[in-house]
Length: 233
Image (cartoon, rainbow, N blue to C red):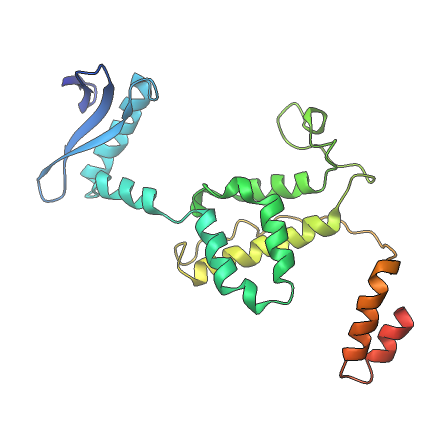
């Protein structure tokens, strides 16, 4: 064990295998000694380990136990946990549940390992902007010098998909609070993210869709709605 003096409590544990790990020793609110692992040397630099140790020591001075705080953070629900619960509890109650699953699979897979509380309004804004882009625009040419997505061209824009995804995310985060996956009062990161501008479009029934549409008209119990479906056809 090699101990540092700035801050006092920071140490480096050296194993026989050659592995080196930064640690921090402090006393909890009850006066008991606690030894917390910061991380491996090489993953953490000395300066980073010193910053982490100072944070742990500050928490100890304030009466918090750094080990318990770190364990709680590690155990905090991820976006992947929210996806699983959403599919189990909410998707079966929706007629559009299959579309929710499609959007989750297509756009949100990269967030699965993220802690729910770590997802910010900027993360959501960037995601919505990326969905608005065509696949070609999502390449290197679709990013500004600052790393932010460029405004999509009209030809590559997908405002309907982007807005439906934003609505889905907003609902998921609202339910996350209801299901106590995030603290009560946690700010929904979708709040304040502007919707994409939608343009009027015509939708024509494809020949392959006609049998399904005719079946839906025949199954419509409301006599005032069935003629409307027929006129659309």
